[in-house]
Length: 329
Image (tube, rainbow, N blue to C red):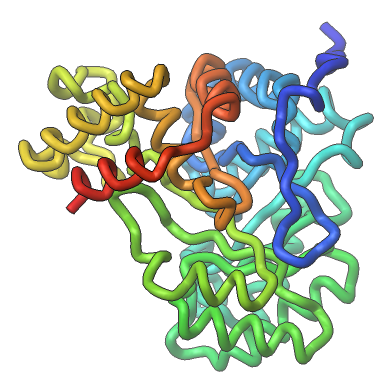
């Protein structure tokens, strides 16, 4: 059946300026990390993408190695894009990344100009696109000069293969250097994608300040700590959960009694606020407007709805923030 998006989609979302750029991002973005590869039913992926767009989510976040297997998320996304979203390309922000192992040999990993240029060419082919809106270097490369990696991003923007350059997983000091190099090249860094949640607060140790001073936006990945900051594990580990599947991103060893005691306290605080723990955890990452967007993963449309409905209750009192800090210590 021909897809027609919800006419009221833009009234459901909050759009926020990304750093000092002219680009606005939805407060909630959809990541295609896990549930869009060949191991997932295409129709489920299609339903998730349609539902996200119907709720005003305009930003779809990919990478060359997303799947599994690597590359398959971009291929499946490209197919759904052609069949459902072709007429709406200019209403979408599509991002991809390169920086982790993608193919054999010395040119399929890290941060060389050779790898980044080749990888984006492959990504565009898989998705059937002429350009991506945002292209990230996915992680710092300890051996390639930062000038080469940032120079490759600048080159790809000038070629028209990406509209904006970005970085991910960079610590504060390297982020500061990368931002300065890109600014000097005349292609400002649009956004940084760090791992940030109630259980992963490293970005507060200088990174968020670097981004703020540099006029660079931020988008937090794993804001629910792999699912720990949801009500999923309050009664133990369900058989069909990520923690039970032996995932390297969340396993039952991480669900310690100490961690779960904190989750239960946070869950009670969320209930007192009239929302789910997952909603409070997303709102907390967005608190104070230091983070531009939160990146959610979804395997069910109800998870998208929960995230969007969080926007109606995303402010915290000083007392609530103090309570959360006390629990997280």
